[in-house]
Amino acid sequence: MCLGIPGKIIEITGDTATIDVAGTRKDASLRLMEKAAVGDYVIIHAGFAIEKVDTKRAEETLRLIAEAFEK
Amino acid sequence: MKYIDEFRQKDAAQAIIKKIREVSRKQVSIMEICGTHTHSISKYGIREALPDNIRLISGPGCPVCVTSAADVNRIIAFSRVNRNAIIATFGDMMKVPGSESSLQEEKARGADIRVVYSPLNSIEIAKNNPDKEVVLFAVGFETTAPTVAATVLSAKEAGLKNFSALSLHKLTPPAMKALLDGGEIEIDGFIAPGHVTAIIGAKAYGFLASDYKSPCVVAGFEPIDALMGIYMLVKQFEESRCAIEIEYDRVVTWEGNLRAQEVINEVFEPSDSLWRGIGNIPGSGLAFREEFAAFDSEKRFSMPKGVDAEPKGCKCGSVLKGLITPNECGLFAKACTPEFPIGPCMVSSEGTCAAWYKYRRVA
Image 1 (tube, rainbow over the protein chains, first blue to last red):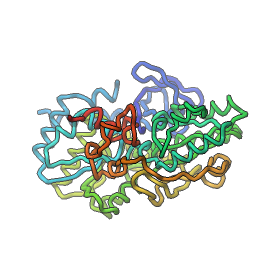
Image 2: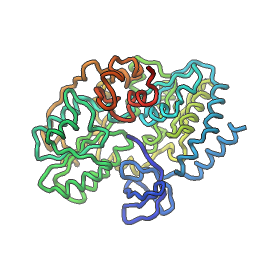
Image 3: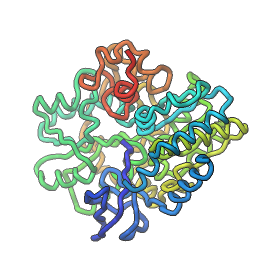
Image 4: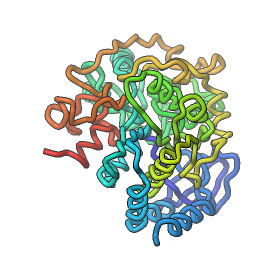
């Protein structure tokens, strides 16, 4: 039940963001976010954005895995 | 899907498995606390891919499963005497058996029970039904608690008078502590839940390393995340270290989501809570603060006390504590199936029994 899906914010109106989740648009409340901007990736849980996805770290993790393991 | 597919690549997964096999020597038991991990580990066959010296144990991390039979009985008793009430619940909760019925059966008998995807949906229901009382059956861990707290704040701002919640939230760190203190099971290290930790921050597990010498890695939910989490734990075991590490660092920080923590603290305060199979764990629940009493279903209504009786023969309690695996229960896959579940662990897709039934059923 703690399932969260990543999606990209494409529009913000007041406290609500429209988020692109694999091509489907979903609305989520931004009430639990300190800051969020159009273009940010966020994790959505139960109709709320609960945290940003740090895209740089995501790329870094993948790069490190590729380097360390796939030789 | 971006930030999901990349973490499912087969080649990388196999390379990490190979590395784990190279490095791992010690006999260890690792508990994954979160139901989403349990599901992912079963789905991707991770348990089978690991060397024999690594044992993965599923913990009490499915909110639906750890909701006590007493609390299910309570909401059912409430719905029977308050026919003017609408009960809003997450879908997973519908089929969870109390001692003699479930919300789904009560709905069939005429109770007004509605499934919501977000707690916010229950506000809409309250607005559209001003002559009815809407009660949100609020189960969930720290990931869900701030969404309910934010919903209560929205209800307050909107001046809603017919919305309340029964707060049955559960907190993860006190449950980990209770399992270790209970001494029934040997746990050498933990895979901590990614989204719970996105809210509370990895620092919440500091006591594991300092007081219990137990390594802990916060991992994401895709197969590469889970495998990397296991690899990071194995490294700690082999190097005789114990630290709190974050694999899922694209989402999880040491401090967590401070805004969400504030919202939880504004509405709720820690309380004792009754866990299915484990019993009462001090400080493991969230109760409404006095200022929000108007939104507390327990204060608003005289909520009947539920009897805490498990369905006959059900061993979910032992499964939740990691003492047995589902196939060691006499009901598993015979009397108890996802279609006709007897215990809660067979109901939710994140329940350990449901995951075993779907992915690991061996004749």
